[in-house]
Length: 167
Image (cartoon, rainbow, N blue to C red; front, side, top):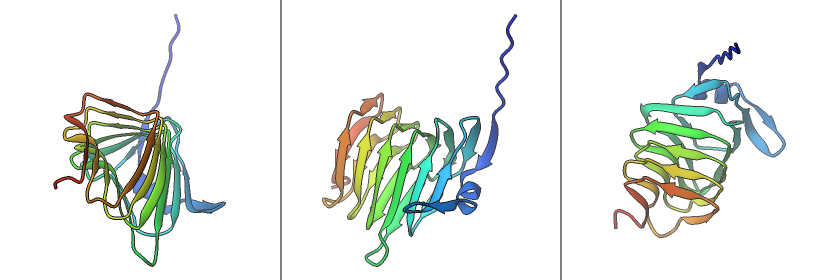
């Protein structure tokens, strides 16, 4: 008989961010563990942040997701990889104002909008899955955001994408 035990525990994503150090070009460099479920959203309004989830889950607990906002004086950046982002009533990831980032190998599942882009956001998405989102996988508000997307899958969303919504 083989017994496999998996121990998962929860930790606030905000707490991990608050305790993160800088590394290389990043002001905050987060390396998450795949045996931990990270809870709650995160708001970024300055600097460059990198989150490597290593396949871990970010459970947004029916709240807001991870949002990135920069202004003309402070462009804000979030590069995120290998995350499962789930359970938001609003969005998984949102970039607005003067923001940019890369989303690589992420799954955005069971949110209202998987990814929302506003204003002058400039985002690249590669090898990611948008699934079972209540409104749509990706929503682009206004005509200014730039989205480069490759090797990604949309499955079982109410709508896969909508440009210049709600217009």
